Image 1 (cartoon, rainbow, N blue to C red):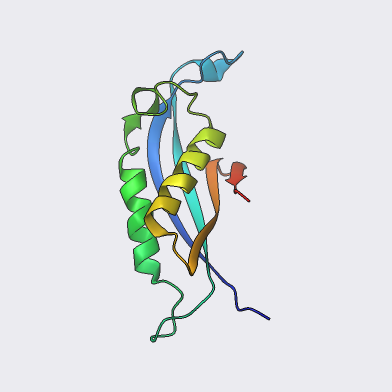
Image 2: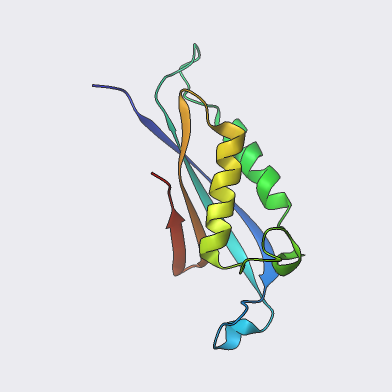
Length: 126
């Protein structure tokens, strides 16, 4: 049986967006205090006994969310051309974190983005 460790870090950011072509109030500019949950799978431990240092995951997530924090998302690539929905933001965060962390023993497995305390989306790629 192969070892598999799932590590999770939680972060947040605040931003505004407008949903293009949305038939309701969200078609007007509004903001959210987003909560980000990043899940990473490690299949091997280092000499210290860690799959990956939580600090490394937190730092990589912060690098990504800092580009969105206190910004109008519709003005930032790729959301200037695709709708800044929770689904699209979660996918963007997942892929960005994967570029930063993925290697032979580390794999980003999921990104959960909370738009409110009661509504979130979880993105994965298989």
